[in-house]
Length: 454
Ligand SMILES: Cc1ncc(COP(=O)(O)O)c(C=O)c1O
Image (cartoon, rainbow, N blue to C red):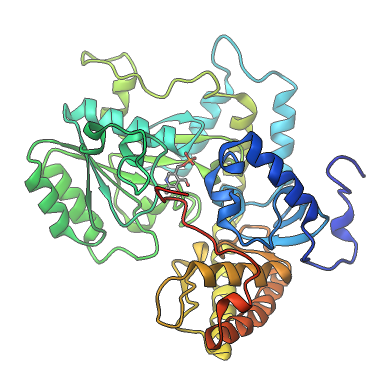
């Protein structure tokens, strides 16, 4: 079948991965920057996040393979900013969404699928009593912030300063190096603590006695929680009258089908889910204890809280995609596959790094189900030049890998190809360490998303 998105059958024919012609992508990119601030609707996908020798646009995907505008094919990692855990165009999910679309997307009253999806979610996340759906991870966490403030009657929010992203809203963006447009009084109401550092949490409560509504963190990111950290954190929060909120945007449906709260055996008061919940369709969830969540309803005598209510919040085909995704997680060993493939990749890339003599520079970090890598310079400092070089050399060899975060669609052959590409790319990396990185990098380095100026 051929059409606007090329041939859907081409993935079955023999082919070469990667390429170094990106002319069509570059042409569209120029137009995109004219029409869209930053040239993309999501910063993390922007041109500044990738080397110049990279596909500018992805036209289509199947499994973990994607095709760009110039007809180049790549194995992709961290797909859809880690939302697409099952694979692009994963049949059961798109079938469920397409079938639901035949019956209408949005009505004047709720659709029964809203209840079905809530049931499926709570079946997988039994540590929560109630759930309310939204569209973005940010929506869900913003709702957790509002509920916590209403429940406690307090204004301050405590966030883990070692975790990179929580929400697009002012309460979080005001605490980043890019706080433009956010009033000082909002910035001053978000305070930080460090992961695995209970003293810093206690210090935060001491500095703002009776003022902190909730403490927000990912239960784990690259570092695992020290023995007892999460439980002690919960106790400390409750002793100080604050709620504990886990951001399960990445850990949920990846660490375990029942979330990081299941893995670590600590139930937060509230938690937010998104990304993997609907395999790339727009769906997020705020989940938590009935006592707190019910403030968003009207079967109580307390002041009501306006909780997650948007026109598109319960779009029926996104809920259908969510049910199909969660059903796949329930019935198949998705998470086991993520861990297995991630471990093979970590072992292969680490061995290749040792062989190339760059094991101090390029290290795989984090759980096998969510592997990230470092790209340091000769002095051991994180380097945007070397990150751009590594990405460039992987892209040339058919791998689009801002991370090594795998999906249910990454096969042994995909992992093997990636390890072989990495082995070659890392030999170039070694040469650049021995010489000058700019002799090997074609164009500018990449840049961090959060920066105050261009
Ligand atoms: C840990 C974490 N929390 C929250 C969010 C926000 O989710 P969304 O982009 O769906 O609003 C992200 C997004 O990358 C995230 O990584």
